[in-house]
Image 1 (cartoon, rainbow, N blue to C red):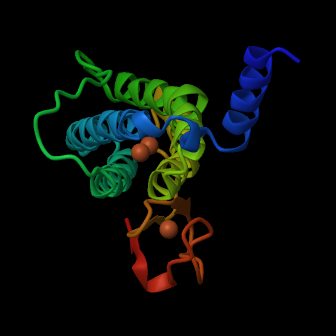
Image 2: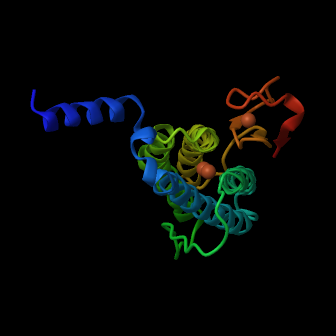
Image 3: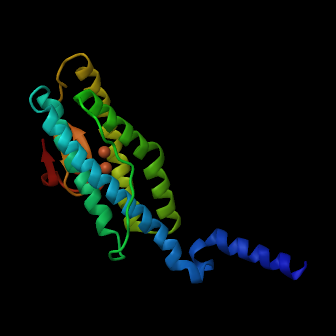
Length: 208
Ligand code: FE2
Ligand code: FE2
Ligand code: FE2
């Protein structure tokens, strides 16, 4: 077998087995990709936290339960942002860009904005960020992205139900909303004994 084919085959085998080992000179560059995603997710979650807080304020009078839902989910997004932040190792200097929603005027539009944002996170952003972090063996980032991915699915379902009610002129009939104070997992009803995502005990849940 010609030498260059043999070498190519070896490189392919090495890359397939351990993608980080073959790119010895690029380890920082590769890791930076997960960090870029963490910074972007941090920016997105921070803005979502603020947006949902604004939406909660606007819904307070007419739709108090929707307002409570926005406040609860805003808290979950704060936890997601915090966990992403803690996994970022580089310091300063980065400009973060994240998709943002402006110009909503009604609670129905606010809920639609929430539905659109959560859908993007579930169908594109977090599956891709998680796959990159897994490829780069960044376990902390994998945990952080996965926890957000799980919670966003609950947020989407709650926002969709809330929008149906609001579009019929009603408030959202919803029980207590529980947020895991460790990973941001969200559920309606009683707090579980342990968080199904991160394993935190019941007392770590905050009720809204
Ligand atoms: Fe989130
Ligand atoms: Fe969310
Ligand atoms: Fe949790």
